Image (cartoon, rainbow over all chains, first blue to last red; front, top):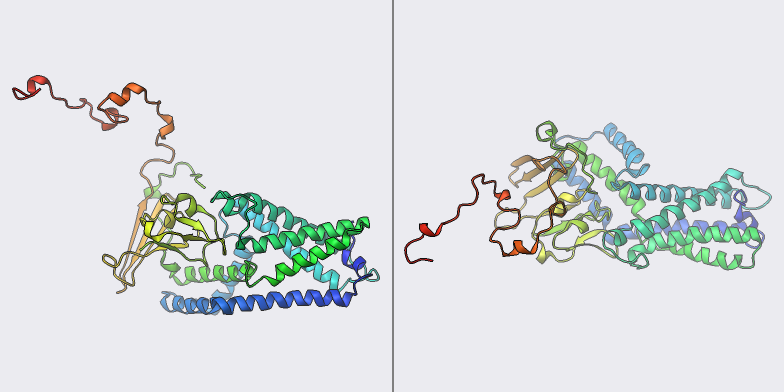
Length: 261
Length: 154
């Protein structure tokens, strides 16, 4: 089951062109939603105004070569390893969800565009990665939802309380969970597989269509904010923060590592 | 001025929610980031400013003592046991301070739970908790004897 392409079996009832149109429509929704979000909140204007202010105040100028180096380091550290998270559980949950989502989306694109029918069988690895990606999203996402979410962990609210900020994580979990349920029901030949497919499509449309109102776009904004932080460290402004202290030898009363958080 | 959160830097970790003594730092329902729900109640104690791992919280001083255009930022580095302050004035002057977080080793202070439970008789005593030992007076507390009092005073 984990090496079968569920979209190839679906092509018997839904034409590959329809599936491909749907996927393209989802991509358009993401791009459009992000652009609308940027324009509506004027976040790009704020970002670039801040960028210019920081550049003017900096004691050191950041050159083109250094900029490239900072971009690569941001991508390799803050983006690829979610290094901004201080809580290791939160970081791990985010890594699982992020890489799971990437695997799930990329393999969906591959299966729908390059291997849409049984005549074009998908490599076992591609199909397996689709299942693994969806599973990783479920593991990381449900762990975050029930245990790590700040509403539950710090505010003490019930894990079943739903607020607008939960739109992204809930639609993502619904999409990944229903994808797996649909694939399992399809391989078992169950009559409920069409119901599962319908719910899967609804959840996926909500996920990609609600970009302007959910936290989906953080995957574009957070790397930009992380890069800006690195640039501010490099040009000396550091958001007006003091530099890291160099006096541990004088002040060192840290005889044991504190574990307050 | 009370504390405010830079929403682009905040990642909604909840440390400020945990540490605020006024219980006024909470999580926004739309963005799941922190914000000060009741600025009127803020003491500007800087607990949330120091606790934030992303340094996403700032506090602007009142205009009667802190001129407009200033900046006061703090960086708490627990692993180095230091707390650093940077004060910037609008005329360009900057003042930097670095202090130890504490002067005794971590874990060296006896917590309230480590002391013996008080007994009922202690409440009738004039001495406060941990007295007289906590006063560090080797000769004991000074006390007036009746013969030292003026005649006629009981």
